[in-house]
Image (cartoon, rainbow, N blue to C red; front, side):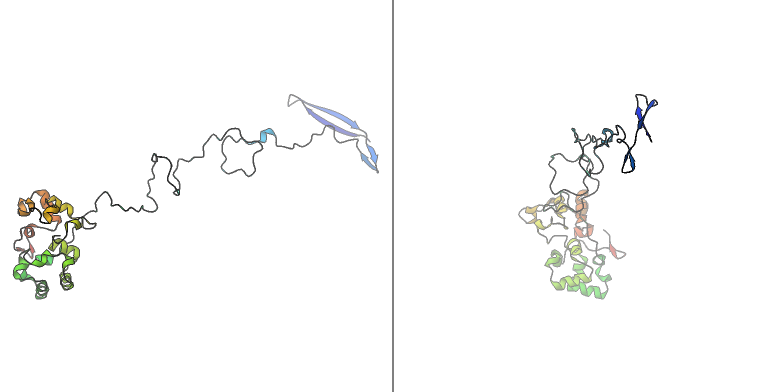
Length: 278
């Protein structure tokens, strides 16, 4: 019995096909029919991928290659891997570039930078709240308040005339514990006493520019300096002016030091419904 085998040969035209029919006589081996050979010209399976299956590496892939390439690329990737976006986390070392970033981040750093030098801008000054009881005339105070005031060496005269009681020349830190206790009963604390009663006159010049005090600017505007403050030269002209003789800038500076017309001129309290006419 003959076995008919067909071989298809492709020509130049995909539509034209030529079939060659071969007749092969079988050979009987151990009772089984055998052909004289395998299919003629049967191609072997390729040992490598066809050329068309090689992946182009001219552009980088989104994930790393699991196995190396059969043939490395002769040229680097056309797209650089350097990102223009800022890093999510800061690097351990500063950038080697001397020029700043073209696109700075619009969000602050995760943690502030610690500096041992003061900020360029001064801390904003905030005038303490006024204690109104001090501006009520003596005869309008209740007996308990008068008793507390007398513990601070106030009398009818020194209460109604500002600057007449020597205790007003002392800062809060210069008061005794008994005096600060009585001043607290009137509603004072260190900030309000030093501004509204002492007007910072008990401070040293070098202390006025300390953080959270920041009153040096107002004294400088009034013409004071370290020599006039320490008595090495005469006081500035503003010290001898009345309230309305001061310039508008000088009055503003004096107001920041908790002065008003009656406290600057050190006159008696004029009652206006329980409060002074400023």
